[in-house]
Structures are given as C-alpha cells and as structure tokens.
Length: 245
Length: 234
Image (spheres, rainbow over the protein chains, first blue to last red):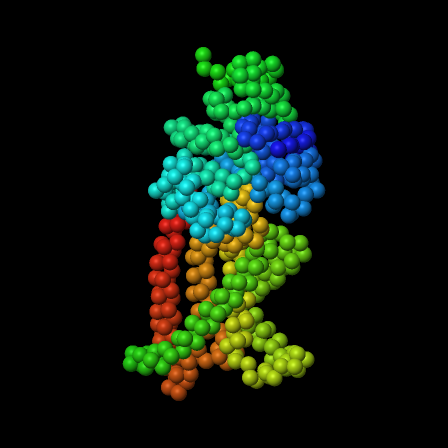
C-alpha cells in the first residue's frame, strides 16, 4: 500500500540517505530507530517532500511519485494522503487548538465549517482534551500540544501518519499521554512510520522495527527479533545503551 | 516680541478643520504603501527571480533620498507628463483637475512602501520554519500558507512599526503644503501671514500634531494588548 524505493539524499557533498527502501501495509506500524545523525529524520521528511530527495520514488495507494521529478500538484496530492507530527509540535501559533485541527479540513480537504467543527470536537474528545478547544498553543502544555498535533494530522483521514520524534521535546511525565494517543491511532487502523527513541513504545506497539545508521537500513525485523536477538553488531551496540540491567 | 497666547488658540480653532485632510492623506498612504510594501516584502522573502532584485534596487534608491525630493519628483513628472498620458489614454481628466492631495498621497505612499516593506521583511523572519513545515505537511498551497499562516503571524510583530509609520506619515503631510495642498501646517502659516505671529502659529500647529499622535499611540497600545493575547510565543 505504501512503497518507498531507493531514496537518496545529499546535502552539498554529504550523502545522508544512501538508498533506503521501505514498504508498509495498511494499518501497519513501523518504528525507525538509530543514533542521531543516522538520517532517520531526513528520511521521514523526504517522504513528505519537506526535503526533496535526489532520487527514488514513493507510491501511496495508486499514486506513484518519483523524487526530483514531481510537479507541484503531484506533491500536494501526495502530501494530502499523509499526516505529519513534529518534534516541536508545529501548531499554528495564531490559531486555537480547535482551529488548528479544522484548518486542513476546511482549507485543503473541502469540509464545511460544520463538518469540520464536529470532527474537531470528536477528535478533541478522543485525545482527552474536550475542554481545550479554545486554548491557544501558548496556553497548553507540551503533551497537550502534541496531542493536538496528532489530532490535526489525523483529522483528514490520512493513509499514513509520519511521526518525527514526537516525544523527544517533552518532559518525561508528559510522554505517557502522547504515547497513549499514538496507541489509540494504531488501534484505529492508521498506518504509522515513527522515528523515536522510546524503546518501550517501539517494542510494544510496532509491527516492525527498522534500525538505521549512516544513511542505510542496518537491520529490520519484528520487535522481538530486533530487541531480543539483534544480528548486527551495530544494532547490538546501539540497543545496549538503552537496556536497563 | 510679545507672546500672544490668545492668538495660539485662535489659530488652533482655524486649523483644526484641516485635521481630516491630514488624517485622510496619512491613512490612504498607509493603506496603499502597506499593500505595496507587503507585496515587495513577499517577493523578496520568497526570492522571486528578477522581481526581487528589481524591488531591492528600487527600495535602496527610494530609501536613499529625502522625502521632499520624492515629492518634488512626483510633482514634476505629473505636471509635465500627465496631460500627454491622459490624452493618449483618452481620459477626460486634465492635470489641472487633479486634486493636489493625490500627488501628496503618491509621495507619502512611496515613503510608506519603503518603510513597511522592511518592517514586514523583518517580521517575516520572526515566523519559525516549523510553521511552514506544518503548512506544507498538511498540503496547503503557498498562497494558503501566506494568507493563513505568514501574514496573520507577521502583523502583530509589525504592528508597532506600522503605527510608527502612521505617525511619520501624519508629520510627512506637512510637506504636502509644498505641492499646494492646504493642510494643518500651511493653514497655520497662512493664519500668521497677516500679523507675522509665526511663533504662535507654529505652536498651534505643534499642538494639533501632538494631539493626533497621542491619540494614535494610545489606540496602538490597546490594539497591541488585544493581539498579544493570542500570539504570545510558545
């Protein structure tokens, strides 16, 4: 359903993504782990054309787009099938929580004001913030902002949600509330690609774990395989740092 | 030299009726200059080829000369060429029919465009990259992003500079007397021409200008505090 083939990306002469491929079934959750500088965030941003990859292609449902050759319209079409959740929330500061969620529905997907409002309220309820619709981002905690960010990305029924270290900027006690929402998203059957350092989440929630380093996929498998019996020494070395003995 | 306080108030009462002329010229110039300045700032911010270099040269040229020179050039160009233009375009209107305040507004708009384009450009820089990432990731077009994200987040940041520009424009209208618009300053000068009490007349004019700028500044404080609530940076 989602097929990413042979993505390459360089910044100046420095190649940071060296041919990464990935495929994802409907409702599947894939977690990408890796040391910082491994290119995992860049890879994720390439999927959404926030960075323009040098070569490779992405297919979502029936639409295939080749990086570097895509027209503005093709990119917009493709983006509208994806949602993205950012490390620093990226809520529109000039809009309330509810307006943030409604914005893509009305502006991009042609919902009526009323439809958008109803869906926004349902989502606010689902993420446990039914009373916070009229708050501005500056009045919300990090965890609340990230939950709104997820609701906004989810509002337009994307085929896949991309998460770029969604809990990395949060205080430890706020991580749980965000992970809980992410689990609910999985339960609702939305496919997810998650870049994270939350090992517990990767272990419990993912269907598949990918370990990336130096711009390539080093190892890929079920959470049990990767966490309990990693084959590659680099994977082992990376995971050892997170293991609590 | 006798100082005639009574004459000050006499002049004030005479020139206060020109306040609307001044306010009109300043506001219209602020709106035209603001729209042009926003367009220039957007072109330069998005580095539109050719246009952005062109605008940047234009702004540098206009910024580098005194306002009075801009006024006189506008006046000269208009007085020498308007009739040819009107004839060529088949308009009925002739130079003599033009309200002189229109020429003043052109000059003041140019000044406002220069100042506000720089103010907007600075304010654009205050919008964080992640706001654009969010807009793009949601599939918003560039125009939607400008309209719904960039401009609404820019205005509160640029507001103090916009208000400052309005005050500068109000003071700048005094130069319009050069192109024979009757406004506060020239009316005050005229009032003193019979008895030579220029000092009192100038004080009267200053009092009117002070009053206008104080009202604007108070209004601006109210406006800023209202905008502040929604846009406190997180």
